[in-house]
Length: 202
Image (cartoon, rainbow, N blue to C red; front, side, top):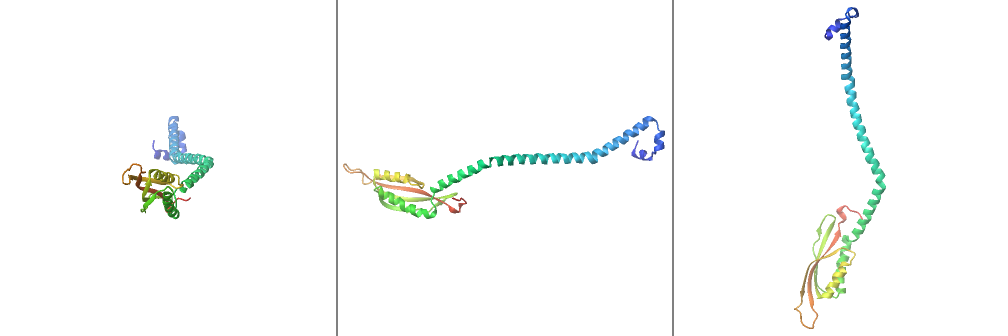
């Protein structure tokens, strides 16, 4: 039985129909109503419910993450403070541009205090890295072995980072009996300068 047939029926005709046909008509109507309900009401509401559940799940996940962050905030703040203090201590070993000039004075002074004669002292151009610059200095010295070792020890105990590279030691005029060996030493001393424009703050 089609929808057109159902529309042509009136109450009197339906009342005269046998019970079987009445049941078929009722069943058809129930199926039609159920289909309309499912298509126009249940499906959209089910989609909306699913979207709301997804949104709720996302919000709950964000809430848990933010709560965990909030719970750990004091720990994070202490860690940031510790790292800032560590950075400040590290930056003490990296002189600023203004302090480099003073450092270039201190190195020859330490050589003289060690008993060495400075033959040449040539700071080279600095080499920029990420947040610091290397400042190499070529030095030629003359003196006894123990004086040279004393100079290296004084450099190692400076508060700034000073690295000694390319050490070349030669005995002056060869070793002579009864005379202390005098060394000609050529070295490269590298110190490091903090770049103020690198985005770090002390």
